[in-house]
Amino acid sequence: MSKLFLVGTPIGNLDDISQRALTTLSEVDFIIAEDTRVSSKLLAHFDIKKPLVSSHKYSESRKSDSIINRILSGETAALITDAGMPCISDPGEIMARKCIDAGIEVVAIPGPVAAITALAISGLPTDKFIFEGFLPQNKSQRRKRLQELAELNCTIIFYESPHRFLECIADLKDIMGNRQASVSRELTKLYEQTIRGNLEYICSYFTENPPKGEIVITLDGAKPNEEQADIKELAKNALKLSQTGMKLSEACKISSKNTSFSKSDVYNYLIKHMEENHEQ
Image 1 (tube, rainbow, N blue to C red):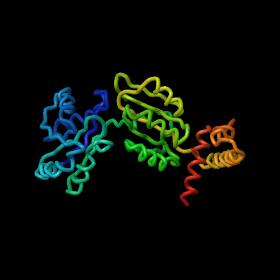
Image 2 (spheres, rainbow, N blue to C red):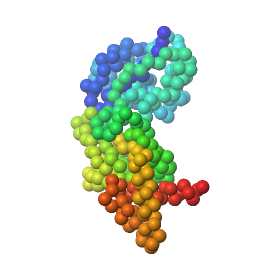
Image 3 (cartoon, helix red, strand yellow):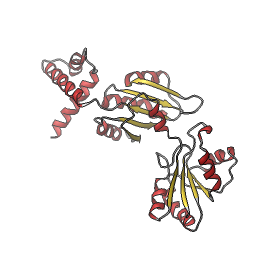
């Protein structure tokens, strides 16, 4: 039976490719590539000579029918992206879904994934996590999405580009509070780097050392319910202080003193719940 193989490829270090991936790429009839120029270099390195068909995120839907017809006629195909596992913030989802709908068997040949690699070395909880991928480029849409994620009690993984990174970190700190985080860039490559600490430290570090390359942000989840109860009391106290004429920011600073919460934690909690009460 003809099949579509989703083949994971290295995210930087070519030694990370599996023997099963190499065997599959050598045996299929043709290879579907996100960028044939990038994939040609990878295949040439391993002396694999197969016909290439281009299919990226802008053409995947349009080209999928002709590719599926080739597979249904008896050919086998492998789908690869520029780096990593197809379908994970990369092309492949549409092709896989259409193949499944057409009765074609879809087989995954596992390979490196930047999100999971970064999570493993983050030092943050790995028992429960959500992969968010790239946040919206539009600032208001990004902040809205972060507000939706703010109360999740699990580790959250984001992808981000270097030129939006500092703005993203600032929004994370403003909406999520000064949480612990891990930032990994250029994973498996020569200049691989991971910086861990709270968001304030990370913002300070990368302001002085502008990031380059592909970036994964791993963020600690919301505090457990019992700690939320504690912050509620701190917020009430800050609100009382502010009603005496004190600035709200100063009231939050005093209220959070000698606690595990920062001024921003208390302030963001207050603002969020003020907005919710206003909407109701």
